[in-house]
Structures are given as structure tokens and as C-alpha cells.
Length: 424
Ligand SMILES: Cc1ncc(COP(=O)(O)O)c(C=O)c1O
Image (tube, rainbow, N blue to C red; front, top):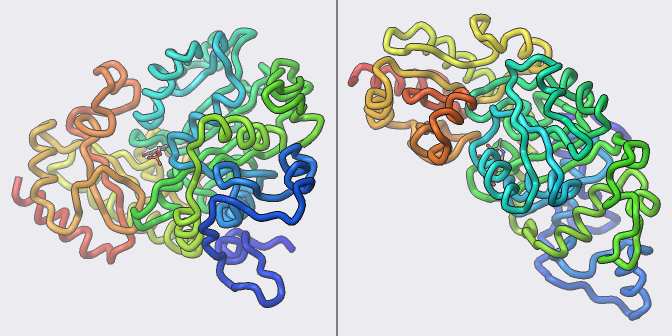
């Protein structure tokens, strides 16, 4: 039965059999009992389905994976302990020392670090592209060792809207998949597979949870990328010696990429999503569709208010007609643009800090994308490790404030902003 996305938020995933709990249970167990040693052997050989050890899989985590997979319209999904580990796995699953990949500069600062510093230590080179580059300039970054293209559907915090169709076209021309981080948009506002993306990642920590209570990540595969035809992914198309010769594409078809990430990377590196966290995400997603609608509506009103405020230098919100992202936003974000608005307070870094300190209800926290309105100064927090040039490339000015508009009554939000501006 196929339902619309709002219905899938509450109905997809766990399907109880006769007499089973209606709500996905928390299977708080590291291990699973079988009557026969032979059955466990079959599961270990990946010839039979089943759980053996919770580092690799757990029924509660599987319920969540199925739900997110249904929302994104993929073939398989893998939960991880954080968004960072999801992005790490998404690239590392198909890149080894000596390989490179193309990533866009307007992405989360933690991803910039992971790609530019940690991947470099592993011998994997990131080649940064900017949204301003022509197709030819982006294509000039590719060579025979390029393994994927990576972008964020709505960039944190610059809020650039990623032109998925355009970059999927370039990636596919060079026989590599397009990976997109869909954390801010969530599948409620944007479904990247419909525009040609091949793999989606999430920091579940954000809107998927919605309460700022749990950490987690997710990778979803569309199953559309043809690893065999691309001819450059031996880790998927040739025997895996670390798993007694399994050939992922031959043995798992469209689920090859996720199966490899699970049985090889999760086995060896182990950033497992816990059953407790999976359960909380599962409940959080019940309200995702209504929350995203309210977040988007409140953010639009806040962006309009800020645009008209004399103490604000500029406002960045893709659905404002004045935004340079407006055309892309109209194409990709027809249902709204999530709750994140960034703006620059007149007077630079110090005035921005004073404004934040003067807020009452809106908290200063290192977080974004949850039900409570919150605010942060990217240049001195999430993006602190970036050089001035990297900050500029990520679209971050010293006076920029990232405002995550919650689902409170918009009048309370605007009143708090007003009184804080009055104090500076
Ligand atoms: C777009 C995006 N991707 C990935 C991450 C990393 O996720 P996590 O904090 O769950 O590790 C974040 C965190 O803010 C993010 O905003």
C-alpha cells in the first residue's frame, strides 16, 4: 500500500503482526537467540535475514530505517550514531586512499572539517566547488579517481538551495553518484531522489527528532546508481575479502551500497544508532509533517519581519523574493523552506552578540532545527575552525546570526526579537 508522505510519517515502518505492540517496541538487547547454530551461520553468511548483534542491526533501529526509507522513497537505509558518521560513511563507503571527491563549499562546518582535514589524513582528497562555478569549472575538478559529488539541499547556515538536477547531471556524466545531505529540508519539504540524487544523508538530530533530545544519523540509498556500469567501484563489484568473498552488487542488487556500509563499515568502525535513540526518532517523525509546515510558515513571517527592521543589514531566506536563491527555492522548495533564517545585524560581530544576549525566550544554543526557537553565531561557534576564506566560501559574515525559528506562536517570537532590537 502506498500512502502520501504525511500518512507515512505516522504509518510507515513498524507493522505489528497479530497481537504485537502497536508502537515500535524498544528492543533493548545486544544479542539475539537462535535454536540452531546453523541458522546463525546462514545469517553471518548473509544468506538469511535476521539480527545477530546490535552493532550491525537491531529491530527498533530497523523500524526507524524503514520509516525514513519510506519517507525518502529509497530502497534501503542505515541508521548511524550521528549525522557526522552518516556523512563519513556515505563517502568512505565508496572512496579509498588515493581517491578524491567533489563537495560544495556551502555545507555544514563539521562536514567541511571532516572532508578537508580528516579525509585528507586518510588519503582521500576533497575538491571544493562553489555554487558560483560554471558547469565547466565544476567538471574540471573531476578525474578518473573522483568517486562522488556531495552537497547540502539547504546549506547550513548559508541557506543556499542546491541545484540537485544540475549537479546530478554533472555527477552522472562522470559516472559518479550524487550524495546530498537533506537534514534541513527533510523529505517533507524536498525529496532529492525525484531530482536525480542517488544517496541521501541526514542528521536525524535536527527536525527528525524535533525536540533536541537525541543524536543520530541516517543514510538512504535510492538504488538508482548503477555501480557495475560505472566500472570504478571495485569495493562493490568485486569480492570483499574481509567478508569471505561477498560481491555486494551481485549478491544484494539495489541494496548493495547500504549492505556494504552496514556489514563492513559498521562492523569495523561501529558508530551504531542505539535502540533508545531510534525509538525517540520514530516518535518524533510522527509529527514531522505538521511541524515542518509550521516551521516554514513561522520562518517566512520572521524573515519578512527582519527584512523590514531598520537594525538588520540583510536577511537570508531563500523564499524571500529578494533572495538570490529565490528561483531555485521556487523550483525545489514548493512546500516551504524549513525554519532556519540567517541575518546580519547592522554593526557587525559585537552588535550581533549584544542582540543575542538581549533575547528572552529565544535561547542561545549550539543547535538548530528543533521545536524551540534558538539562535547562534556561526562565526564563533559551529564554523569557528574555518579560516576567513572558508567562512566567506560558506557564505558566513562576522555579524551573521543563524536563527532557527521554532513552532511557538509567531507573535511571541516577533515580540522577543522586537524587544531585543530595542535594547541595542
Ligand atoms: C546539515 C548538517 N549535516 C550534518 C550535521 C552533523 O550532524 P550531527 O550533529 O548529528 O552529527 C549537522 C549538524 O549540525 C548539519 O547541520
